[in-house]
Image 1 (tube, rainbow, N blue to C red):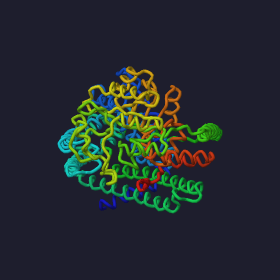
Image 2 (image 1 turned 90 degrees about the vertical axis):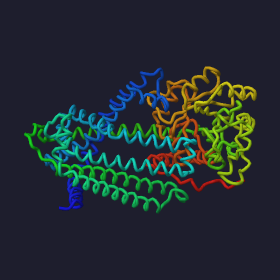
Image 3 (image 1 turned 135 degrees about the vertical axis):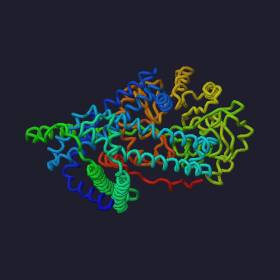
Image 4 (image 1 turned 30 degrees about the vertical axis):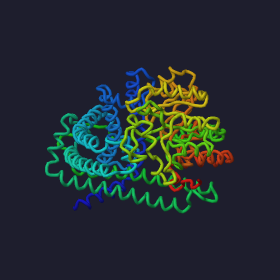
Length: 612
């Protein structure tokens, strides 16, 4: 049998057992939440307990992971997640080897076997993570050196925006390193392919499973590598076909411009639901096919340890009816709270991100004035110190992205800044735009819009907090500004300097209880926002802002959650979304919320405002 035939036969075999594999896949995935969540929670609590904070945000998380304790904790978490994957695959492999056709009997016996081997499986997962890390770390180090050599002369945003030659050099070199790493990993993984089977079906100690597997795979590794490559290619092709069909169905009734919004949304949600189910079935079938492939390489050479015999899990009718009744009650309770949230009046404020950055060059007076014109409640800007002590509005560490000028902000004088055109990259009509000062922005916004000042730190600040405070007080705008920063100690310092001013924590990632951090508000990446987080922040008496929200569906979803502020590059669009939501009934709002839950979005790249 050819390698391709072997793989297609494995997929056919998995599909033939879909009545077993799909229910098992779903059930075990749900079970894993209960297994993994406590371990992750313990690790998070450990990380937070070692600090003097209730939560860790971006920089603090990185510092923790790089510490000895953090590294061990990270290994433990990775092992838990790998154990989850091992658990799913083990149940598939166990049910396959036991030959049961009934999903309840196959699943129960396989899960019983896996639970009896759980300590050994966790030991296997830990060793597997460590072995893979040992293989990856040298390549990661080489990649880091390449990135440092090619991508550190200028601010990273310049490289990500314009892709200069050095960017492509880094891509090619790091890509070559990744290919070599992949080759090494495939060689080792093919040698370890039977390790899990040995632990599971022969009771081999995890410490010996890798070497025994390598011995048994001698002469077979080449065939396995080819079959694994074909297996992966087929999985990607099938997933691509499913996505292509779903895209065609979505395109029939596009959300944007549809004359009947409700009909368009219902149709789109049905398509999204079918797409999700198809993806779930594919994942279960592909994993089952992998189990079939590897099972073909495994022959038990010792007496198989006893394991639970397949048993009956026939559930009494009254238990099913009771579970259904509980589900209905929970659904009604959840639905009532959901409708209450959806019917609640929107109180989200519109915050112009770097002004109106989708419509005008970011952090310029043109962008600030456009945000004010478009009705932004707040204008958000970034500030740093120039070489001569002026507080200027700038996000990056240098002027490469905005002007192609190799000059660090902290080395630039106001005379230098006056010569740097930061608008032409966006459009020739903005050639006169120069980096504004904090004072100029505050004077323009006074009486028209409030201003959120993000304090930026690149390790060269001198007295940023005090200089900002002096300018704000000179203009008597204490009640019209707020400060925030990714650097939590800076938030604490600002609260200490001016306790009565609004100050907030900016977080792209976080672990722990954000609500326990000092500050009047939390500004989080929209991907972090959940109804539970919003509720806990409000219960703590704080506000929650989300960034950067430019899609109208996502804006609506965030408003449904009850966030207090939408940080957006398109303040006019945000205001329009909130206006339209005020005219909608709960059904339309619910559909909009569900649409975003299914990952739907509206392409806004071509929606640049053409007004002068």
